[in-house]
Amino acid sequence: MPITSPIPVLQGSKNTVLRSDGGALLLSRPHEELRIPLVAIERVRAEGRSVTVELTAAAGATPAVRRVGGVSEAAARAFADAVNRALPARSEEDVAVDGSDRVVTRVLTESPAERRQRVFRWGVLAVALLIVALALTFGIREGGIDGFMLAVATLLGGAVAAVTTAGGAAGLWSACRGWYLTRHGITVEAENAADTPSRLRTSGTYVYTDTAGVSRSMDAGRTGAATIQVAYDPQDPARVVTSRSGLRTVGYVLLSLGCLCFGLAFTFALVMMHITA
Image (cartoon, rainbow, N blue to C red; front, side):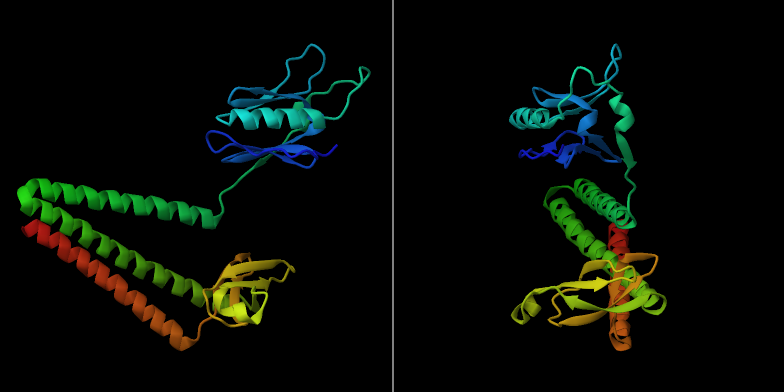
């Protein structure tokens, strides 16, 4: 029996989410997702800022429960009332089964894109903390107004060095990936997602279709073109790049290389200035 009543999505603590999905409840956690059919639920209880999903169990057995804490009290009550109304009717003659056997658990693995984003965020945080620590160290060591100015100069110089170095390295990596996919991937035409010709220049979203017939979207920037050529990895069709001409690729590589060299040289000069100060 599907859930037809409006049911709120419960946002719990520790990135836990409980929501309805047709004839089941989905309990999402950072590394797993549980699908709990309504037929496996005995009842749902709202207990302050927590919701407890009690599963069916044989007579005399202790029922298994799934609990989500840190939710809104009002949302918890509305969620419990709506789900309890949607539970399938059971007669006294029905034999209770262990609801745990009907719960399907799916392990959520981190995609390569998510892993790169996580590494990038931690890298940015580590570099920022290092720059702040160096600025405070140099400023305290020098003391006075000179120390304050030195700390500010360290913060600004460190930020410039970090941004240019990271930008140059990212540009070279992107150029290498584009070179590889252009030569070893599959090149197709991607169409602008704009619904009218007048919106072509304001839309940077393009849609392409892989060999399995799946339509995928990508952000190529506001090129204004109705179609562009893109190349994707046949093993991972979501890994896609915009095809560039040879001259544009060379210019992109030279620009990235220049940023990388400038960032490294600026970092070296900054370090030597503080060592010899």
